[in-house]
Image (cartoon, rainbow, N blue to C red):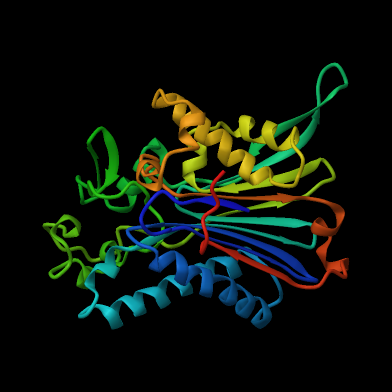
Length: 327
């Protein structure tokens, strides 16, 4: 697990929970402030555990219900703090979750974070290579499929997605179409004064503009599946899926997430015509040129992780986000 802080407040949170029956990974990419990501870090996993125990085990429906419940809980918090802290209505988090249980991998995503699988594949020369396989579906208005989905969901709103500053944005404000939080685009009661003018829409709305429901993929794990890279969008702005997989495959496990961070920052420095040696020396004020926090979790898929139900490993809980890690 590794994270780099780009802003005054670290807005990202991350989570790894490993017990006798399953492994849970969460990457929560906050925007507008840290409150939503922190709330998700506290509540989402707990809701998944709750609904799993109430039903018949892990399922896509359980994960979806946990996402929607966590979102409703945060909107309730926004309502309770509206008079004293109205700007919390503009705080949200992109949420990427992976659950390994009984040989299955559940991937749930609401936002534009991404998980990539490193899988061994045989080449034509009977040699083995590790190929990158993207497992998550992203929700960013830069993608034509996302813009079309928004238009279909809001057929009476020609301004549901518009270009602003050469970037496609939902209502001209935000790039992602799904998230937890962002109450000002889910309930009209929060899209008014005293919320800042830049978040207020000129017309009211009846149904939520952003969705909290994740897209879910279920993947049956095989011995060829080597590792998973969970990361917020900041990593993927600078590295391709295959570049990231190659770095992990060709590196020692210890510190590999930080090595991915270093590679991304080297690419960012090149784009800004900076030397990486200079980048290592700059203070936090200059680091803010990297406009977004980056959070990475690399999960290696050994036999114990895949067949967690037969493992005797004790529960392990790791939550990140409090202390940034600089390369």
